[in-house]
Length: 152
Image 1 (cartoon, helix red, strand yellow):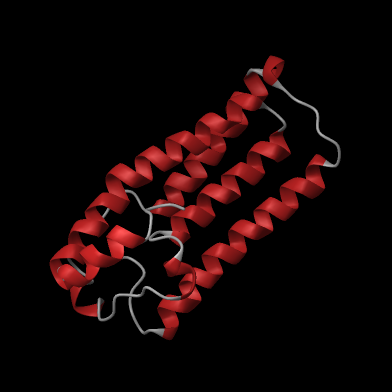
Image 2: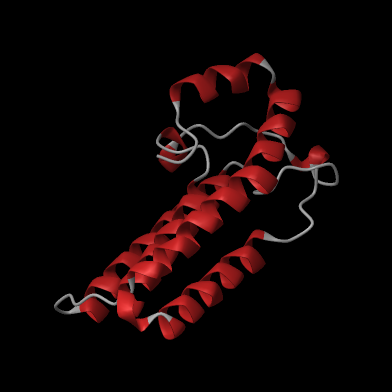
C-alpha cells in the first residue's frame, strides 16, 4: 500500500502549482485587508493541526503512515484527541496550509491547488490507508469510520 509519492511532495507540488496559477493568471486576484496576517494565522492553524495529530500518534506509540512495510508498527487505532474530529488530521492540516497559501497569493485560481491536493491525497493515500487500517483493526475501525468523518 505504500504511496509512490510522499504526501509532503504532493503538498509542495500543489503549492508550486498554486504559485504558478497566481503568477500567470493575475486577473483572478482579490484584495483582502491584512492578507499576510490572515494567511499566517491560517498557516499556523494548519501547523497546530499537524503537530497535534503527530503528537497524539507518538503518545500512542504508533506509526503515522500505515502500509505494507509499516504494518507491524500499526499497534493502536488512535481515536482520541484530534482523531475524534477527523480521521486524517495530518492531511487536513496540510490542506489548511494550502488555504493559507491561497490567501497569501490573493488569487482565486490558487484554490485549484487545494482541490488537487485533496483529490490526490484521498485517492492515492487516504483510501489505501483506510483499507490497511480496516484489515488490521476490522470492526473497531469500521465503527470509528462510521462516527468520524474522513476530513472534517
